Amino acid sequence: MLKFSPILLAILYALVMYRFSTWRTGRELDARSTELADPRLKRLTDRMAAALNLDRIRVNIYEIDPVNGLAAPDGRIFITRGFYRKYQNGEVSAEELASVIAHEMGHVALGHSRRRMIDFSGQNALRTAIIVLLNRFLPGVGLMVANAVTSLLAAKLSRSDEYEADAYAAALLTKANIGVAPQKSLFHKLEALTQSRAGAAPAWLLSHPKTEERIAAIEALEARWTPVT
Image 1 (cartoon, one colour):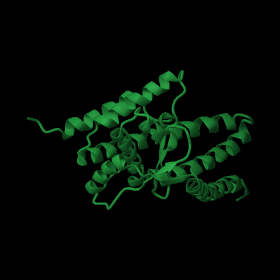
Image 2 (cartoon, rainbow, N blue to C red):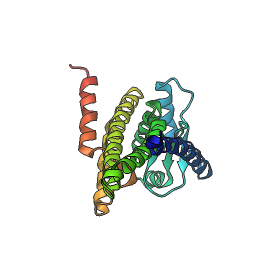
Image 3 (spheres, one colour):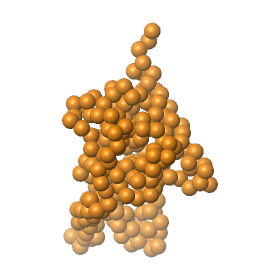
Image 4 (tube, helix red, strand yellow):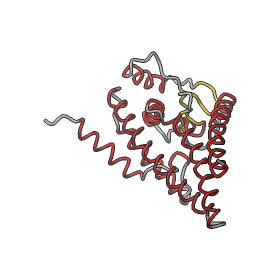
């Protein structure tokens, strides 16, 4: 039993961290966000709500500067102040911002938001377990291997989630008669932002699939949905 104590402790640590991370995230978002009130965006979110048979879609502004959108584990949708400012300045259209909202709704609907928190805790537990086991035989190597394994796992899970959320958003935007053109044009703009900052990727692009691959996946869906004349 003593041999497995470190692994059991790692699992217990993961559970505690999951609870703590969920609580801390909710508290942070409560303290630094307000409901978005924008008539033009509301017209678009109302169209998406009607497509989903919902009364409305509530969107919140998270008061931080980085350009990002996020879905909280409790199902709330957030756009950062930095992203909203891009829209106010005319750098991002209302339809493009609506595509971000649709994407984050995909994360919620598909269970990614809650699962990511669990995955993060689980990866910490896996990392701890690998370090403990390998350090018994190869002292000092455990940390390197653990970091590499958990980084690869996190990246793979993240990319899979992004493709799924993109597909959900594409379907919702199509059903709401907004279309996927804003979704694709926004990807091009985010890539331009990356290049203009000497390779410093915006937060929304970190751990995401390549832009051209995401656009190709959406276009493949378009081709399937477009009737042959």
